[in-house]
Length: 284
Image 1 (cartoon, rainbow, N blue to C red):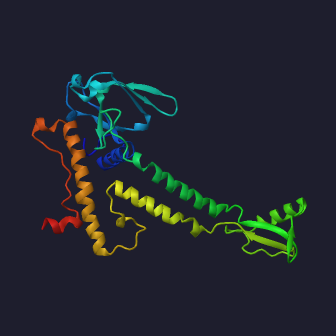
Image 2: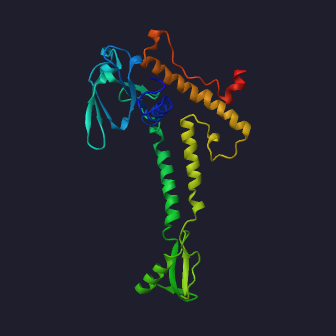
Image 3: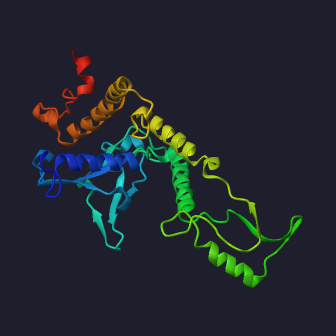
């Protein structure tokens, strides 16, 4: 079952998918197909259910009456974008959570990215702006007809249309002209803002640093970060395993041990990191 949780996934794929769901939604819902009367070590298959398609209705009950987390579930509905909907027996699902508490309900965890909403939207906005600058820079300035060294006059409608049509042939994209050559007596007034003055790169970098801090991921390990030396990278990798990956793994696998009722068999499912080169020195 661990080797092949279901016909479509290996455990590596299954675990990676579960991890993504927990990082995005704060929890992962696992469906097991187990014969009635048996525990999940006899499951035929286990599946990760996409949380975006799941609606959980909770019972209006007091905390001291709940003996199992499933007691607080009233109804579980699985609805896909194509309009199909089905009700899932609450005995068939298990909710694996992160350590982020949800203030509205004890049943689910809050999404880890909830507090990063502004940073994520800032990055999206910065990349949208960069894309717009590359594909269509908008009005960079004003062209008016120079009548003498001391003044200008507006272009007539037909002149404006002609200049606009010609101007669209120039730009930074492939196939466009890079320099304007004209016999018209025109005056140019710059109104565009240079890309570097928008500080889009600095905004993206700062937001990524905030995201890394939230997930306890050393920023120096980001591919775009060039200032870290080899020794620094090794040290940061060690910190990443020690302070983030291994503690998260302990939380995850404590839930898997409960899922499979392994204490009944005097067994424990654990994840081994002793082969990781970055932490070999500490092992010695």
